[in-house]
Length: 276
Image (cartoon, rainbow, N blue to C red; front, top):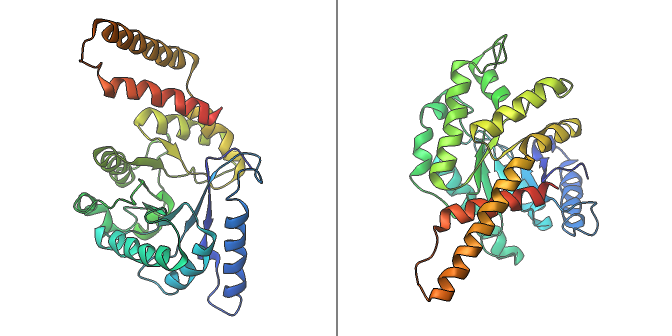
């Protein structure tokens, strides 16, 4: 549709009135329609962002839209591992009821959005769930909960609290073998700032970045694309390992080349093909 790897439908827009059922049905129908890559210009993952678990109607919303079998669920204002477990348990029951493949619906917690949650982020490592696919954060939401007037200083650097949460998103994700996703640039009209933020996100170790408007997608894709030198380096590593394996096979040696390095090269090329 817009070149994004995933589209997220925010269920916070579903009203708590008589119009809720119709909107839930529309979202489920959209999820079903775009589950077929032939319908879309480019295949993309279909995610939903539910309401916080400490609020009303999140369960009713989730049950209804799961009829469209979304690829994943973003859990906002995650308070700790107990909420991830709660959502995982709920998804297990729904998948069974709807005949969906077990653990097919992934979870991405949006973390550090309250002062308490920001101080207890390490607790998320205590109970890793098989559905867990990554972590993301919400700079604007955190600022609102803090009563802060800004998220970045006049030079575009994150303020201290923002840096704390942002760094922990990367560290948690890397330590648990999942994906760290950067918060979106707050003003979608500021394309220059969006490009700067996206380049910084990739250089700092994020695997991807959220967008709140289609105009932000191109800059994000450009920033996370492999450069010609990176592609050449990945190609060279793949060729080197292929030659080494062939030589080993000919000599009937059993020792394999270092898999992590080869996997990294393969990952680089797969990332380029996915974007291109």
